[in-house]
Image (cartoon, rainbow, N blue to C red):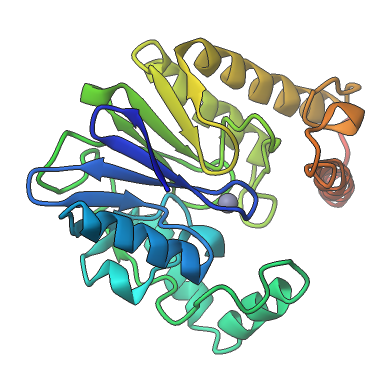
Length: 278
Ligand SMILES: [Zn+2]
């Protein structure tokens, strides 16, 4: 079911880790950001759109993680964009013939095994590097690219509507998940991404995270601060007090504590490998 969060901006929430697909009304059709996860949910979204006489004229994936790269045949053949770096990362992932099988195997351990169509996964067109406006016929969509969480991650700011689509940041339930694979300084990458989002926060009325609840204007700064406090605690090895971790986690989100512990462990390994600061 589509829920309006601002004029001409609607959200379709998945049962799977509260994933949010975002629909933005344009002049000739809609822009669809991070379409969703399960096949039946994307088909439901496609039906909702066609029932209201809308077609998808453009797609966008905020970052190169499988749950943001899916598509359903019923959504049509619109161009699907991502940043140049996002598209290059996906191309790289998919050049490994075992990539989709590995995602499918990972899904077998979840409650949505067999429910995720992977055939159209990752067919992303990379926008030229440094593109700051999404090319489409609708309200201006600013691309705020940064390197937190995943290579070529982008938040989208629909300025006229006051909506910030944050990708996998600024969630009320998920902690910042650092990109610990490729980058030299994942902590600083994350902090600088938060600064970029902070730069537009004053004009944001609605923040839509990739996973979690949609937040109002009063939530935007609070979420930025909470994410920053988390990352700084990781950096400085300080004890963490974050409502998303530990007994205060929302029911169903207790596993976030495991993600947190995993991050702590991998950061410790990294600093051991690189020579721990003294
Ligand atoms: Zn995600």
